[in-house]
Image (cartoon, rainbow, N blue to C red; front, side, top):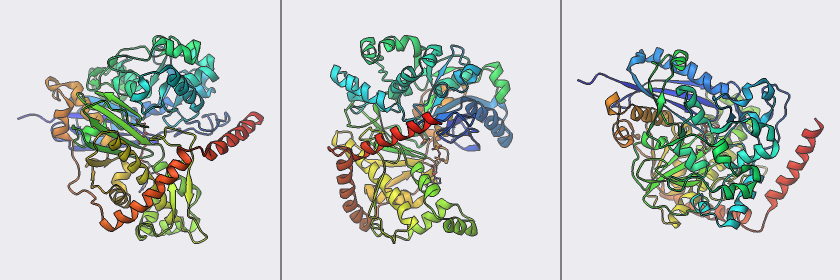
Length: 564
Ligand SMILES: Nc1ncnc2c1ncn2[C@@H]1O[C@H](COP(=O)(O)OP(=O)(O)O)[C@@H](O)[C@H]1O
Ligand SMILES: O=C(CO)[C@H](O)[C@H](O)COP(=O)(O)O
């Protein structure tokens, strides 16, 4: 009889780190632990409370990530009663591109007194959008030079990705650029903290750093065309071996083992990205099944057999999700954030009181009220661009729109319109994939909101006119990371040799999917046609009103920051 062995996965999300301890062979979750980041998302001030950040900035503090490891892993062991020697592997996943400048030994520049008040020395979170100018210039130069890589990224590199962020550091803080021995994805940094070695993961390298398994990074001539000082950026700042996902990055160091309570030498998987790592956690290892990881934002991941150019996708990377397949990614930059904005800025005190009296959260109250509305009843329609448009327009300068409001409009109607807008955005992405010849035959969802909001999942089923299958785990990314931890251990170490084997035994979906309701489908078809008209009008046509407004705002706020 096989003695039970366990694996741990840690999911570093936008607002918190979540860890799960899972039984190998069954996927049974024995314990989970959550640690909110001490500094949260810094988008107005640095931790000193004085250094003001400009618009579109979003930073994090790397010390928060270490706290997640130090608090959650001992908690998992305590709660489950599992002995450290029975934990055969450890895997992590992160939001991406979440990057930071470091010294060669892994020390983040923001840990040094010289840089602790320097915004550019901190972690730039995936939703840091202040490198849009650099992204625009990069795209223009790449188009002029006929760079082949653009097609693999839907025709545009996003300001969320690595190269625009590095270039922004060089442009605005050459002293930080010079002091940094390397620029790293946070997922690779945390693995470096665990193992003592810098190993880069092929997943974020492929999706976010323009790296290709067969051709490597773009040429020095391309980087030189961006900026003479970037010519050798790959050798100077992006060095380190790139290992495929599913490999072992190394083993837990003695020092880190002491800090987190595991055994020294425990195998650690190459770092992964939160969206991509979730696919095996819901048991998907074949093409045609699109998975939405729904949280602060939504990522859409899908396997295919051929490399197709899909307009506005985030990227297609060979072996990027499951070895042996083309992994496609698309996304929406504001989903949970969209609703949170409304809750924090629009919902009146009477609703908060009502939620308190009922002993439920404000999301639940608004969802209950919104569920009483019929599709189309509010007369509202929104464009889900409150944090720019990631797919299919790849433009962080686009902004939100709500149309149809009257003096009778209620908070729950706006809440529902925002949910519907995110569903329409997903339908636009699905239709774009199909039009480009990449089949989407089934829809899956996981992540916090997929678990918590049944109304939202029903709306998605109705808008897409497809059943939505929900991942069984409440912590799909962390479960996926744990599965990669078991693969890093290998069969010989009590785990698996491939992620497919792990997915078969440990990944699963809930029994019942959400199924489309034909009358709702009909109404949403009409609303979607109007959504698509607005999408084209504000996002693709000559109309640049959103950009003009943003430019005026940006100039005004920069002036204010200067005079502060
Ligand atoms: N019941 C709910 N319905 C819709 N959105 C919710 C609900 N509860 C929380 N949210 C939103 O979910 C987001 C957090 O998602 P979650 O998956 O927990 O985290 P992360 O993005 O860090 O992975 C927040 O933006 C919050 O506004
Ligand atoms: O782009 C990503 C993955 O490729 C980000 O990690 C993601 O959008 C952020 O995730 P979340 O909203 O779940 O925190």
